Length: 511
Image 1 (cartoon, rainbow, N blue to C red):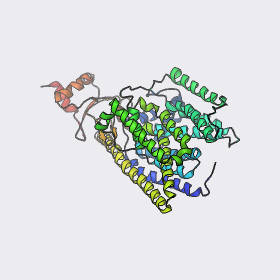
Image 2: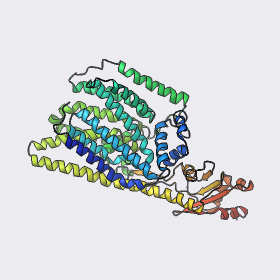
Image 3: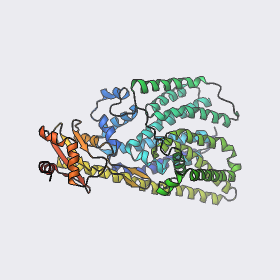
Image 4: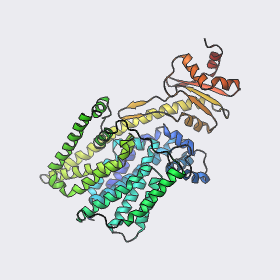
């Protein structure tokens, strides 16, 4: 491997990328918990260290078998309680680790530190990553990526034969298993191993020879089969729900966004991309554009053709879950492939400019760096405003509830009318303050899982009779007849109002 004569400047550049990323995401430390955050914290809240083994043997309130996510939330809850800043800090640390790992991987693949540094910059500041970083529960992708990338790097270094120790191989096996325990889509790693070995053979001028030593894959398959048996037949975790709606156009949508992270989540674009004929035209146009760039830089990129194909394969294989279940956070790992492709194209393009003028090349590099940073800063900031806004709605509702009722008797029944569950949508971001975890949020703040929570999640209730009807269907009258502690709250125009007495009267005289 050709090491740069002056690697220090690249290491300093990588440090600068990390500092820049933290500076841009620092405001997210103030963003409150939303959606599944309450669910995960409620699951691990109050658990002692002796209960950690149960994370690996029981589902405990979730349908997925992801014990390392529980462990991460347990660790944060033990340190920070309900202070959201610590949880966001953990996400930033995890993303920083992945930036370093992405840099190492891109350097191993491209053998050029400049390209690896540029790819790391694009990956670090990719606007689509806000859902993985700013949304606390998005850490599933972050933790999964740490194990995924570590396992892959160890595997590549092992098969390159540069290291005598088999420790790298064992490290790859261990982190592969940990990746599976973080997210089930780690099964794609075995395919990536195979693609990586094929790429390295092309890179070493060994032509189209197939890998000769298949035995090294056997332990990975044993781990995978053991994981499947544990997950499906012993733990009996649910299979990830598959959504077949618009399955054929969703890859087009996300493929475009991973290369051009602009606001394309508009009704017009969705309408166009859901039309098969127009979708084919979009794909062909995109492919023609990429081919045009490649043709222009053909002489410069022909040596990088295997790497470009490897990166495209990386995107297709790892992006597979998005074909069935939409979500921008799923673009986290695949974006390393697109980041390296962009870095290769930009680098070779500027090298072509440099042949004519060194000064023009420096100007081009400056424009590229400033453009990436300024664009990413603008997009990340506007997207993070949504998380801050939604978190503010959750914080307000909870704080008003606690201030009105600092103490609630054990086993009380609480009814919430029109809680802040409506969608908040700006740009490509859409999320909710609570979603289906409103009961977790209330129980969590009172540290009481015995509280019974009822609320209307489907639509806003405007008429008093409709509100009373919801209460009656939810057992309001029966609770009163049994002399149970009952409280009724209504969320109205940003304020949570207690209306227990009013609805008791309305029950007596509904007219």
